[in-house]
Image (cartoon, rainbow, N blue to C red; front, side, top):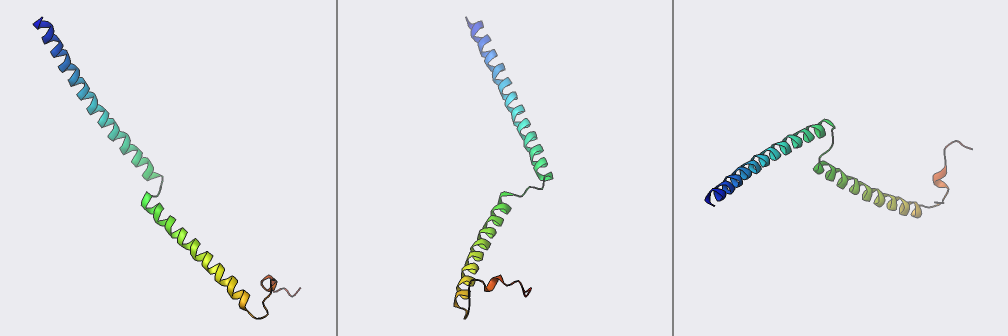
Length: 95
C-alpha cells in the first residue's frame, strides 16, 4: 500500500511540475503575443487613449464655442438697423 501511495505522490509531483512548466510557457507566449501586437499597433500610427480623449475634449469645446458664436451672430443680426432675412444672401454680383 505504501508503494501505491508513494507512486501517487510521485505522479502528483510530476503533474504539478508539468503544470508549473505549462504555466511558464503560457506566460511567455502571452508576453510574445502582447509584444507583437504592440509592435503592430505602433506601426499603424494609431493614437493613444490619452491623445484621443484630449482631441475629443478639444472638439467638444470648439463645438460649444461655435454654438455660442452662432447665437451671438444671430443676436447681433437681429439688432442691426435695417436688418432683414435676405441681407446675408447678397452675393455681390449686382443681379
